[in-house]
Amino acid sequence: MAEIRRVGVLGCGLMGSGIAQVAATAGYDTIVRDVSKEFLDRGRAGIEKSLAKFVEKGKLPAADRDAALQRLTFTTAVADLQPVDIVIEAITEDLALKNALFKELDTLCGAGTVFASNTSSLTIAEMAAATKRADRFVGLHFFNPVPLMALVEVVRTVTTSEQTFKRAFAFAASLGKEPVAAKDNSGFIVNLLLVPYLLDAIRAVERGVGSVPDIDKAMVLGCGYPMGPLTLLDFVGLDTTHHIAEIMFKEYREPRYAPPPLLKRMVLAGMYGKKSGKGFYDYSANPPIVNNLGL
Ligand code: 3HC
Image (cartoon, rainbow, N blue to C red; front, side):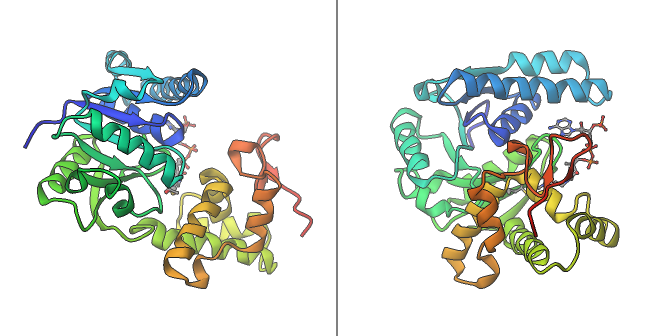
């Protein structure tokens, strides 16, 4: 089994930059590609901030931070990923865009290169089928914030070879993460269970079961969750959750995956959560206050 030494990451957003950070920290030469220097600069700044936090907390020696930063390269050229041993795609949830990149890299990368997608809800099979390496294709699903969350779902689709699955599983463990094996079902394990819960929390708001902060408080104090569902929705992104729910609804045709009307309206209004400044909470205030949704 060929050793993985060089890692390529497609996308330098929240997930891509986090994946690149953990790969570089784990000792891999890592190259991250995004479409513009602006996106790359933002991702790099996020990585530097996160690594600084770990150093400040005594969780990472300053020399290791410097070494991790040295191992990171940023590029806008897809062709720069040609020599990598594994490609991890973490771009927007757009199948056509993902497949165009995978197709391009399929002709550039060597036969030993594993392709992986960090998709939250699309099927791995439909990406694998766009390449001539469907046996060397897996899902590697990380969680936000990637540097802090221990889990990686390693997703095996119908075409994934045993060797590729084992290689990807070992690679995830080498990042200091806890891998679990998941089947190529839309949502895998975590989102299959998490998304209906988050959508139900929105339905609870719609029905006036409790106020936004009380619903959050109830789940934090009643179930010991680190964040309430509405805070988590703002954190993950309402647009992202809406998109994932639509894909899962299409896959399973079950009402519990259907985006509730309030979610749709908030997304239409540009209330994406933390990233846009407003969601169930208003982040222009410190600490954030409840956003008046006129309910
Ligand atoms: N890098 C380094 N440090 C970070 C960081 C990062 N990326 N993000 C946060 N931190 C630091 C904070 O700055 C903070 O430092 P401080 O103690 O000095 O202030 C520390 O970590 C702890 O953060 P918080 O004070 O915010 O407190 P928490 O104890 O709540 O920890 C959390 C944060 C780990 C995010 C925790 O709230 C949590 O586990 N939340 C749930 C997250 C979750 O469910 N994620 C999964 C989302 S679903 C998903 O990703 C799947 C996708 O497909 C949708």
